[in-house]
Amino acid sequence: MTSREIRKNPFTGEWILYSEKRQVRPDRKESECPICVGSEEVPSFTQPLQIDNKYPTLSLEGEIKRYKLGEFYEKMNGYGKCQLVVYTDDHQSKFISLTPENIMSIFEVWMNATKESGKNESLRYILPFENYGSDVGATLIHPHGQIYTFPFLPNDVQREFDTIQNYREKNRECMVCNYLSAELDKSVRIIFHDDSVVALIPFHAKYAYDVFIYPKRHYNYLHQGTRSEFNSFIDLLPKVINALNSVLKKEVSYSLSLHQAPLNTSNSSFYHLYFKLHTPQRNPSSLKFLGAVETSTETFINGILPENAAAKLRKIIM
Ligand SMILES: [Zn+2]
Ligand SMILES: [Zn+2]
Image (cartoon, rainbow, N blue to C red):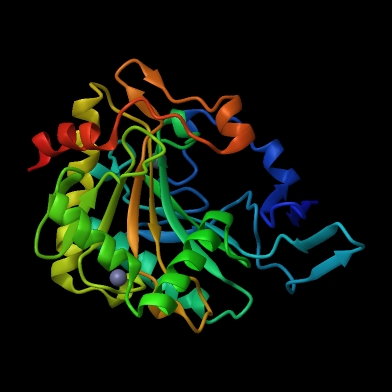
């Protein structure tokens, strides 16, 4: 039996996922890859495909149920989706080595998953992502990503969406579009830009080398993008990862995620999508660990100014 719950922190409004089955995940040997062609999960492979996670934290089993148990206790059953996206049949490959056509097929999986989840009114947010490397907890070597679909707006997304919504109501303009113009004017935190996309380390970056990549044009979901915008993203994403490897003098662990508008909201048009590339590597020899200041106050201490980190990446990419 699996015990999955989503509980709310009554002090902050944040949601926390619980899944007891995850604790019995087996430690696999590399020789037993569960997503190589011929495995139970992937009997054959022609293009990137999405499969259900065998040990999901969230599952569509049954209906969504919400409970309010007295003054302090609010929870839902662990309703939602956790899926794997198998990128390629080449076990030894990695995202940065894939062909542009292969990455485009991964984009198509993400776009279809977003459209599909948008039809289920109980789902509110979809996060396509990849965790690469042991420092971000990746346990499978075979090139793959994941998609989590939540029945609530995750904590950071809720805060960000509220801010963007308030800005829109006050100024009748997109905060992200205006922010991108300001950053392009200043240019010191820009890593790369072309006609379609802009990559930067934000003024307020929490981690040393967090890179955000936006389309210059305002749109909300990946499937609203054009082929030339996709080409720019597909060209740039591996370049940024390679630049991180070069500046940090090692193959870094990273998390790549796609942030789109919430699902099933009347205000989705306010949102300006972006990709986020995060590495916990803060310099060639050390990782950023979260200590008391970060874990107890969410106040981050960053050892490099974003302008200086951006200059290092820009030198390699531009
Ligand atoms: Zn494999
Ligand atoms: Zn915008």
